[in-house]
Image (cartoon, rainbow, N blue to C red; front, top):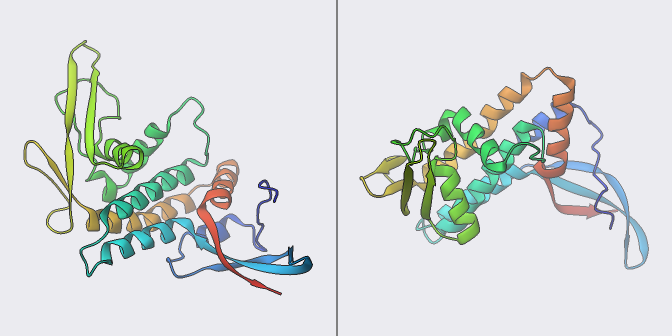
Length: 237
C-alpha cells in the first residue's frame, strides 16, 4: 500500500476539518468510496474516520473507569500526553521542528491554555534561567512515554553558572486537588488532568477558527488530515 496516499473527503474546507474536532469518541464521519481488492476481487471500501484526539482521550477515560473504578493509570496518562502532543502539533500547523523543538512547542501549548497550565508547575522556581523546559508536564511526559515511569530527574546550569535541579516521583491520584505539592513530591489528579485535556479541544478549536491566514489554515488542515483523523472500521461494497 502506498503510504503517501491521503484520504480526501468530499468536503475539503477548513471548516470541515474544524468540525472533525467536535466529534466525540463515539462519533465518526464517512470517507469516500475507495477501490480495493478482497480475495482477488475488486471491491469498494467506505472507511469510518474518527477524531484522533477525542478517541485517545475517550480511551483514557475508559482506562480510568476500568477495574471497577480503580483504573489503569499508566495507559490513561500516556494517552493524555500523546493527545496534548497532537494538539500542540495541530495548532502549530506543522509536524516539522525546524529551528524549534517538540518540547518548546509542547510548552507553548500548555502555557497558553489555562486548563493545562495549572498542572505545569515550575520545577526550578529559584532558577534565573528563562528556559521554558522547567515545567512539570514536559518532564512527566518524557518520563511516562520514554521510561514508563513517573520519576523525574531534571538539572542544568543556569546562565549564572549555578546548578539547578529537581528529582522525585509524581504520585498519580484520582481524587483531591488537581495538582498539589508537599515540599518533596507532586500529586497529579489524573482524572482531572484527562478531563481538562479533553475540554481543551474545543478551546483550541475556537482559537483555530479565528485564524485568517490562508497559508496557516492550509497547514493546519494538512496536519489534521495526516494525524488528526484515524480510520477504524469500514464497509465493503
